[in-house]
Length: 143
Image (cartoon, rainbow, N blue to C red):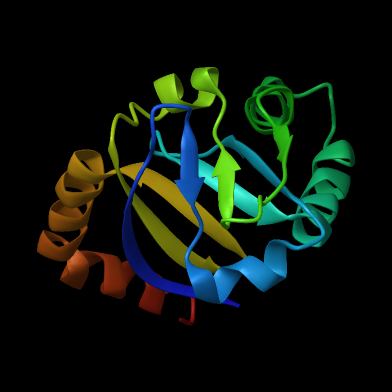
């Protein structure tokens, strides 16, 4: 399970150090892809395979499902954790997420989200400001 918020820097070669406590989960490899809200999603291979199988089952006759599958699948890249615990984030994904130097790694149960640090702070402040409304809406869903 991935939880917590971690601050890291990306190096000149596009490598990001994965938080130490998450590295063993990624030993079999991982997949990084475009996420929602202009962040990146980093999945273990097992979790990625579950998601990809669900995406493959979506009806291709619906424009929204095709668009979502393209966002997630066409942008995906297999990544390996090197001996120093780093993964290479491809340039096209860094551009998508506007990741420059400072990165926030947010653990979200079955995935990590990778955010440009400034974008994360802006997003987090907005979410915190609206937390009451968000909680109320989720309460209607039984959360």
